[in-house]
Length: 338
Image 1: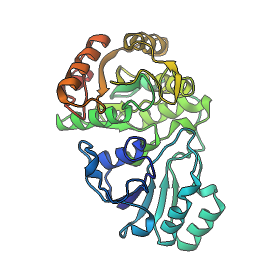
Image 2: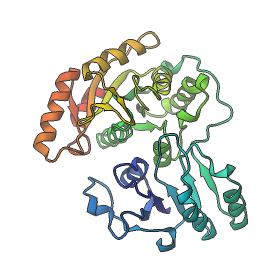
Image 3: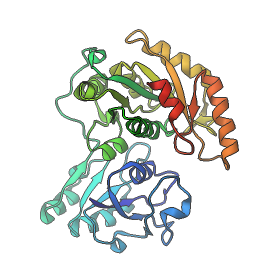
């Protein structure tokens, strides 16, 4: 499918959905929309393992495509009214529009009417199924080994670690699959439930449902984590995934330069070692597990030597192998996972 990705004013550092779809999605990206970076190309930003594409000012400059994808997931998941002209133009050109916002395009009267007039689909990937229930506490009965990526904060690379571990496992001949729990993962994999939109009583059950759905068809499942257990806004969804997945092993994800909680800078991050104890002690009453490895996001470190030093220090702090799977490889972490 040929898609354009909307990332106005955010590409690349604050458009993780856009970057995730570019890096891991099975889409032909014909353009990225960003008014502030128009005239440049994706390749100009030095992103590792990301295909190139032109960056344009508006949907009017996008080549023929099948869909417009909203590549931004702002805090609160709202819709920025400055995006409306591009969404309107996409619909009028006969393009589907795909969004992972808490604001549902299908509930927008103008967009719904235009989509009906032009015979296109509005896909709100954050809208949860209507038949979710509470968990039964039986996820540990699946045949697959279950691994969960957990984080020291939001936006530290849990989705990236999930996708990199699955890819590395498949390259080694392991039948592995990702279990997407966020809008970017759902967009990449084409299935899943964005659990931060699920009623809190049903979060564990939503994760259990996905793991059970895929757990007997694969040898390894890597469940995408969300948020952080100490996050003042997102801790509930983190706990729900932790207990719903009943993971056999955990991989701790961290950002090498992060000292305070993203978007909540009044809160300092605890020490990395504290997270190991927090996650293991919280998970164990439901299903005993342990942090066996870690991934470190080193994108803000200038060179490989500094990144390698940071990775080694992170590994020492968690007492296990660590890597930046994008800058280096996932071999040692995968070995611990398997």
